[in-house]
Image 1 (cartoon, rainbow, N blue to C red):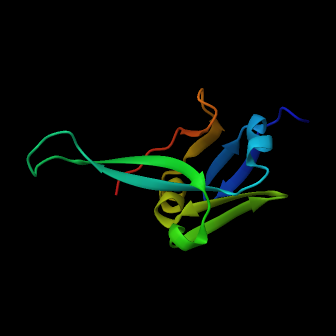
Image 2: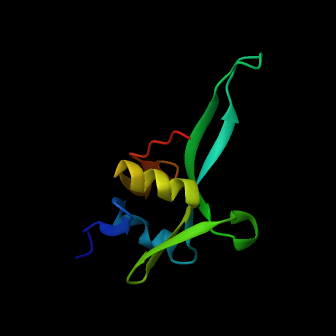
Length: 111
């Protein structure tokens, strides 16, 4: 069926892909990775903020990745993302954002 979510196993976790983004993904492979950003405070005691994001997969800048695939659907995961999903048995969702890009829901990360 066209409206069923696509399930990709990521170790002991699951990545659900909304079928509404398949047309958007037709020309590239999504790469889920962690962005690190320094907190808003001005001293050195600020915690680093970790956020998962989705970009186009580019082997030249993506570093060590793990490929997850099922049928004709493929997603590349940064090694830390894969391990976090696997260790915590997470279920994450790859959906379309209001702005028309991709967003990740349900992912938590702690180094």
